Image 1 (cartoon, one colour):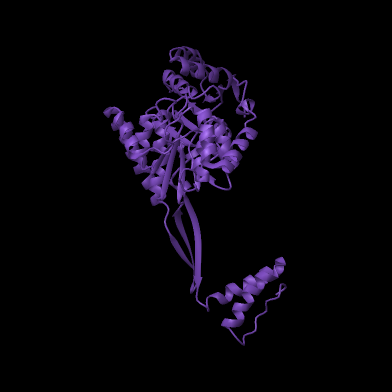
Image 2 (spheres, rainbow, N blue to C red):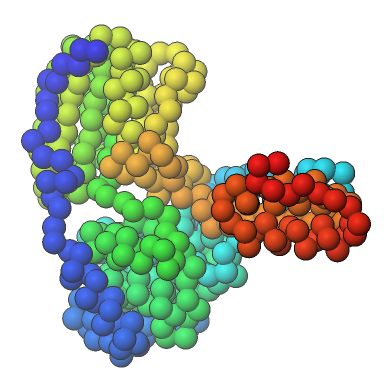
Length: 435
């Protein structure tokens, strides 16, 4: 395949790797050993916040009162969409039974985890939508206890809109603590919280590293890197909309890659011409992030045809994938590697990030090649069970004994032998490994 790079990234996410592992590991060990007091010590250092860690009902009510009614309505709108989509997702998980042999039944059950810890970023940007995405799906899944933690501001505490969103979406506790210490609080069951079975939600590199280190003793949604977005566009696409969408995702952070793949050189050149002016028109913080992301991480690729475009996209396995091209059904059927797909200019990643119903906690850094994003399913344990009559176990027991002996696992074989001897006395079975 021939791929012409009109713009090539000078950095990758690996270029920005920092030595955070030992720092995060040390903080987690300190907090696990020192408990509440040590977590508060780190909170004072990093959050510079002296208020209640677990918000009281009165504090939640007061925070909710500060949220403008129009914003409350928007949050309720987004929550309703996410909730309804999550409910449909949950309906795809059903308990099943299969009669393996007459009288021998195997089954599957979907059981929600008991306690979920939802991290809601509140530093550079206050991610109201992250509270909606993480808490709502945990609630629909049926988790018994949902704790939402978010970094407080030194004087004002957790952003009131985050408090409101977490509250109406079903959080049982709202924790005013961010960073590694917030993750540790829900993981280790500090401040009277139950120990989390799963940690979900986006965060900075320290939060991501904490989740990576803790994975195994708790579940996590995924190990996330910088957010990334890719647009597939043909000659029918609106260059201004394509450029705007690229810039909208580049503002996430200085190391957030955005990519354009097209089969139309003229479109590519027009988009590249427009992007700098669109970035310059952003507010200062957003402008700095988008400028650096576009300068260092963005790529623009021209392919020969749509099949080559699709293959190139699958190689990147983007977190967000937008198609602004003809024959959307063809792209839906052809594309296989993405976190979330946005078909046509009538939708955009921003919709999915905030309010349309699909989840915005998605695989980054190529992880969409093997996993999807956060959903009700992430909170569910798919477990199996079996039961049998004595007669139905006869064939299974014989096969088990012979396979076990062939493997050299005599103890396993004897667990089958004793049942055959008890249930079918006097019968002779050839249970040797060689049959």
